[in-house]
Image 1 (cartoon, rainbow, N blue to C red):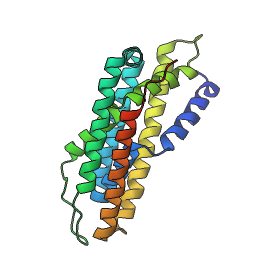
Image 2: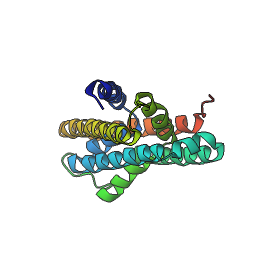
Image 3: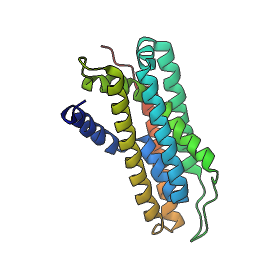
Length: 208
């Protein structure tokens, strides 16, 4: 694979991951509410979720979901319900007073699992990868090496993007001390997550 062949994919991927979505929102919310340690746990969950969705797509799960309305609908509702659950939980999350730590969720394993589920259980991501990656595949070259390079490129860019959001939000947390401001942030984030869940539930499989 030449650099000229790889560069358009890298640019398109960088633009895509820079657009805030539910996973970035989750990273920012945990960074503001819990600090850098928990934000990085969220980032790791996002990275593994992207890897799962992209690998599943490349193995043909995306084709199955595109062909089966039942499977697509089932996974769509699972992902949408989980987003709404997280939104409600974030809306109701308690806030700390002054410099007191927020202990509403202190298990990094649970946070990691949340981020993983939000990212991996998104049928739109799986379908998207099936539609997106083939646009850059050269049919005259071996397919497997191209897929490996493209998947690695996307995952690195997505992970770096999530880390950047996490670190910026964690730094902002040092300034955001007011419980009133923290509550407003939690409720705004919760509302957006609920909205993302409702949007995912309403999203319909496109017909070719």
